[in-house]
Length: 353
Image (cartoon, rainbow, N blue to C red; front, side, top):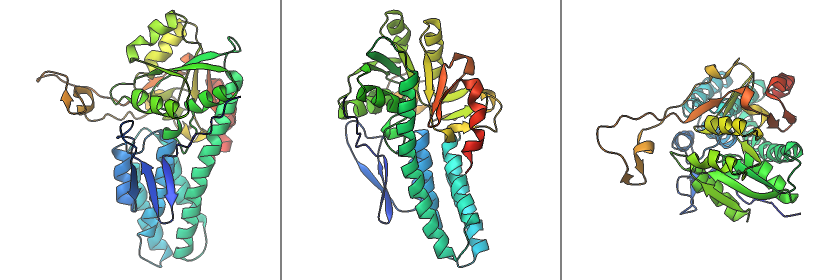
């Protein structure tokens, strides 16, 4: 058995402010950014200082408290009206990651249900944000352990492919897809992680690789277009990815390129798993065609760092996510267990906010 106690916590409350690991600077530089107001939190989410659906949700919860702290009134009605404006600002940062909306709604519901003076409401909101933070770490550990149960039984030591970063950096800690990896490593079931570099922002190369190196988990980095070749060579035994939003039928939005990996896995008879907390499932959406897909700045495509890699006159298309159809997904791994996409409905009542 190998220790997998990750010390990576991308969102941390410190007395009167939030500390975020600046994920735009990794792996070259480990930098903490201090966030003391809701405007700065909204900017941090939008510019991907903090990223990954569960981590965005935790950050948004703290952003709601910071916004509440800035409201100067003793009127409960006016406070709730102003708090809704904070929510609107945070909702506008990233349209695809449903955990963002889930956490904001939970904070709003808490404020509306809590009786007492405004200052007490603010205290309760801070405690709720801290609870969301702690719950996410516990959730990821449960996802990791349930994922371990459904991984292929042979070979004894598996090689797992992942796409983008769904590790401690994308959550409050431990990770979803990398939570499964960490649990497999802990129990001696993991031989190696293969990580797609994940163009255009290179989260696999920069973040997943960094996390695995920190925890001494063996990792091999490949370019996105190598996945099918590696599968054909018998180098991959399972694929585990995260998710930013899952529709009621199991269609899953994740980082652009995930759909391609799922198709390749299906063609090579390799199980394809999605690991995500229940808060990522949007039961209001019948299928993946209704998931809003964020389109990001084309500079992510035409330059790497300060280097331009394309000629002038080229047009660009830069969707941040694609949707993997449910029929390509072997199982969705949640903190309540792993189920086929068609069985997700059983969890709807557990998702109360």
